[in-house]
Image (tube, rainbow, N blue to C red):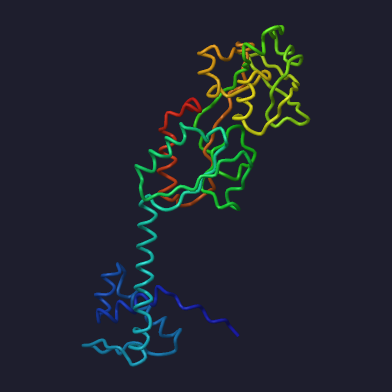
Length: 304
């Protein structure tokens, strides 16, 4: 036995319009379709229901008893659907709603907070849920709209918009360097206390560049941490040489509180990305935030 086709809501919508206007021609004109199409859709609906919904004569079009009952039950739900469509369309066009963002700890500082504050003032109908963490999150499973990522991306299933690049300097306090031989080349770092990020057994490999030259040095030291904020604090306190983002040490260098070690050597440029899941229709709230990020003159990275 052939399975019956599900009732088409488009056919129902055409019938409701015909019933309200009392004319196939007026209904077809209001819906932007040929009269023959409107007539065919109503006839298909009648076939699906197994009843006559309209009484057609050469001079008049009226509803049958079944047609009147069907219209009374369908017209309000259809109106509700149209209202829902308008609400969703308006929400899609107007920047509003909750925006879930995750950023690394390096961004949990005043410059980014100032940026978020200014953004919220510009878009008062947007709310932001901000997660500051160095942990890796799956945007889809964690229901996040956007992540800001420092470094190369491993997952290619997301869209990544490059915001800029950042760089790291080798720095130490005058107190730490006093009485110690100043490194003259990258291998000399292995003989110093170095403060490392994500070090296993307090060891890490530092990749340094100077023009076309590059060096990979295994370093170790008294402190390993998962974020730069704590590493910078221990560097400021003289516990060793840190490889810190320039934003964590430029002011201290200018004040001579930190000294650049091997100043011709730095980390390779580190890309910064705004990462979000593929969406056929991007919500306006995310679109305006990405636009604001791209325009922001961030002290955390240099322009892309």
